[in-house]
Length: 152
Length: 173
Ligand code: FES
View 1 (spheres, rainbow over the protein chains, first blue to last red):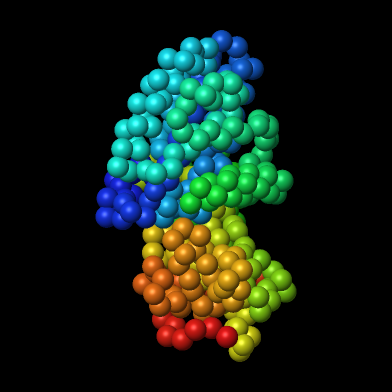
View 2: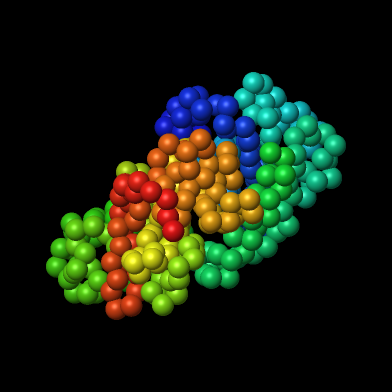
């Protein structure tokens, strides 16, 4: 399910079945072109993976709008805000919350978080319609969903 | 995924095979004659949108999942949407193309994915189950059979179209 009126209506009717939330963590940085384009590309690829995950597990996983932040941030204070998000969501709603990101800094600060962090290693994909890309996306989705299902 | 500003670009015409209902309707409104010039597939199916999915020779009696991509235009968005179907030949050699969307809350079901139920479709979300025909197994969360895709075989290729209700009453073979 997504953060959309129709999905949320269904969510409130079937809350007991939708117990898992996925939040993408998306860093922004406009200092250099190469960094900015790299981050934008990672954002696209993360979104594609999460769209596919959501499509396969619509009935149990809610996909949150992305948590977006400045990359050179102080991760201590950023994680405090992120915790406010997750506590708002977990409060009587979601039993399992997963944070998904390409940003390795979260991995370093994992102890500050109270949800499950899934850190994906980066890759560059030129053409998302290619067979190679599709295979890669499917593999990522498979691995992530296996991990998530181990919590169910 | 970058050049989606113009609703009907030249590229989209050339990419007709990946173009979904909305995109194609826009195309046909603006240039109704072009439609017939492009490809015979489109002549035959001007009513509903059919997409080439797989060579029929690949279809067996064991359900297999095939994916394809359509370009979907909603009111404000254009997006590439991946679709899937579980396809097999039944005991009468008829092609059956089932939608993977669970009738409970919409997760994707898979054939034989649960070792306890090797001859059924299984939904990983809340353990919904379906027989091979798509009929829902009683006392599992889904309350209806998996939908079917309209299909057509042209020149040895399976084309899938709209989703229709599955009226099976009995379990599959
Ligand atoms: S979504 Fe398939 S059993 Fe609930």
